[in-house]
Length: 194
Image (cartoon, rainbow, N blue to C red; front, side, top):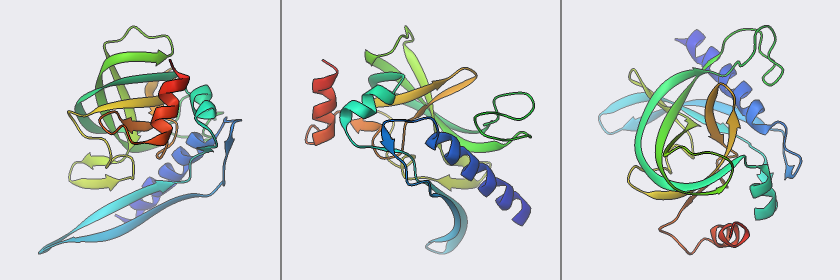
């Protein structure tokens, strides 16, 4: 069990490093963290791995939009959890620095697209990945994973990858619930994307 947790934590940290890379318009603290904790649910205790990372934070809505490959809105219609290998290339991966496969737990959200604000896609359903999930009785949680709810309408700002699902740019500025119009950044984003 300890070996699995060590491998998982190493994988999550590498994933966080990938999420932090290649962004010129952000301020990155460079600190990546993953931690394991025991959470008490009444009479039973379940081991829950809490995944957290310091992603690049964008200083302005314009920087956020510029960093995104696709900006779209839609309703979350489904979600499922699975392990995804974050190593993208044969040999040493230039993005992750990994020499070997590194499966990381993700939740894959299926979103019925309502509007494309930026990007080139004709898809009616876009699937995005977020760290965390519930796989074979193991629970992995992250801040963003707990924000997205099925049946809700959101705006998503994502980065695309050739052989994987798109990912959110970060866990605090890349998802906006369109049913809550009191968000200042959401209103600025909508003005920029008109």
